[in-house]
Length: 281
Ligand SMILES: [Zn+2]
Image 1 (cartoon, helix red, strand yellow):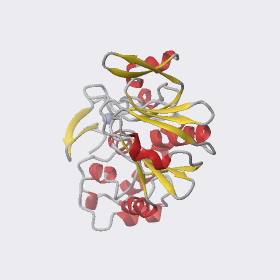
Image 2: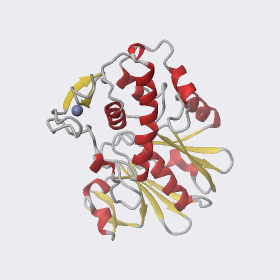
Image 3: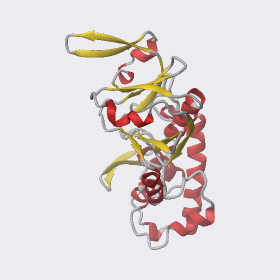
């Protein structure tokens, strides 16, 4: 699932391509474009990331909410409608858009400058909907602080009465918003903390290291334009770069870069969790 660095990269690219423009038409694969009609022909004033979600601020207090969930990612380009016996398909002339992961178009937003923004989403879990100001405020209120903005003091305060294992806690969007399975694993490896360790048993030094490496790893991943281990792609259709820099994520059975021990994958809180049993004790 796209996490903070992927969604942040997506938002900054969306801003450069769509701010000040309008969606004059919207196509939806399920044929139900009507439910997005309020998002049409309204100037895009701002686009912001909240945790892992994206909100387009449109003229007239209309908000287009997008959550990419498992496999959703935005693409920028031009697609042409082609009819075939089973229905309609959209075809791009660009080679990179022919990559399989870029071919599951569920929505196309037609911009008034002739370009298009598409949402490719193989698993079809992505959410796209028009929401009211109240719904937006409710959504934001449910989210924990942003890991890039939080101060050390605020971060330490979050741990009050928290007894969950640290890895699922870091991934809990009401605790901190934006971290998922990949970056939680990478941060805890750098901080040398066992992902199963209960939050109330963490030492001050461990919390400090977790705080430091959250910022450090997320910034590194942002510089690399995110992680394309799974379906996430840049708006250009190309891959980000963090998947080539994994320390533990997706490395089960491979040697730890620090101590040569084999990286393990265990289930913690229902999620596959990668760690080095020797470095993270
Ligand atoms: Zn190790």
